[in-house]
Length: 227
Ligand code: CA
Figure: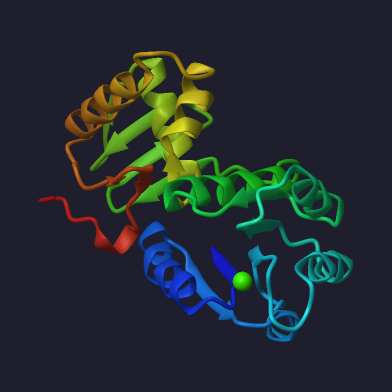
């Protein structure tokens, strides 16, 4: 996921520039509104600080929206309700108040991208990672050519993670997708299901833990059968 980070504060920018790649994102930083407009092409999510030196953030948000359909998350220290409303009215998809948790920011970035692409997303039918083959439509899993039996929930969970194509799936999202929503024991149940999947598949490295955020499927070329 290519993130255009529009932020004039060096400290905030460098924290995100080092944190976001750990969540599978690449960061292109623009320190001014002008630079942001010049770099808009190719961005898949825009993180927009409202307090910029050259252009008012709300105006910039409106300009970006006129030029592109890219999801925009406004990030600002201004927590006032009317600022929030102005941000959303000017075309932002979501609004986050500083200071915020990086895990929450990542989850929201995935959420706005999903909403934006909900209709046309072609879900893959078969996902292959090394010698693991997940046939999502037929509810079949094979490892090294041998079928592996999973429970319905286990398969559902595996297929949701696999369909994300290496993007991080937040705990909240997985719980919502597979179990229909949070409940007091949800986190524990999720972890137990992931542990069972790792054991049954026999490739513990297939599903990676992203600490404090969720899980993701490992990239094809980094999985070894001895893992
Ligand atoms: Ca600022």
